[in-house]
Length: 70
Image 1 (spheres, rainbow, N blue to C red):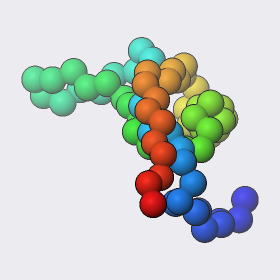
Image 2 (cartoon, rainbow, N blue to C red):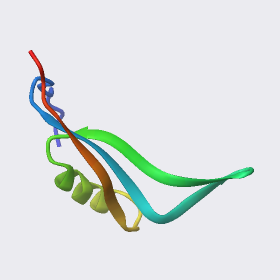
Image 3 (tube, one colour):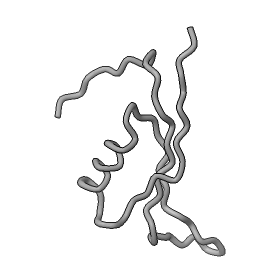
Image 4 (tube, rainbow, N blue to C red):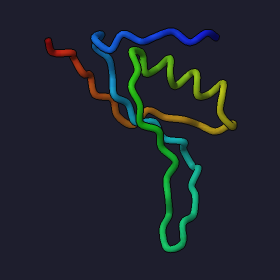
């Protein structure tokens, strides 16, 4: 897939996606594996994660719609 420049003046979503039942260990802490990002279509982004990352269940925990102000 070729890289194309993104137009940041188009509204979109801030998302939080979690890899369910996947944890990491830092001494003294339990760490959840999450991804925060921007997308015009969070569901399509979730589908891309399923096809490009190690197999596990990913879930969208939260989305926030962000309009561009002129």
